[in-house]
Image (cartoon, rainbow, N blue to C red):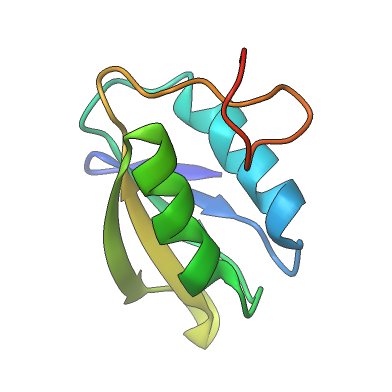
Length: 96
């Protein structure tokens, strides 16, 4: 993970959706509201799942951004009061 100029970059590699959401959820809990996270991933369903997850939790999906090495990256802005998700199933609302 890299951090510079108010942007935190998480390299999710080729992780699938569930593991990506766990990684993202755990990292955003440590960040200040308004921080932008660039999630780098080759997961083909990320552009579908990330906006839905952001809508569900209250984080702001900012769209596709330039990633390293021509890999896609997706920007997420950390919400002030995000909804908690299930500890083992981050695609479900519940107790964080």
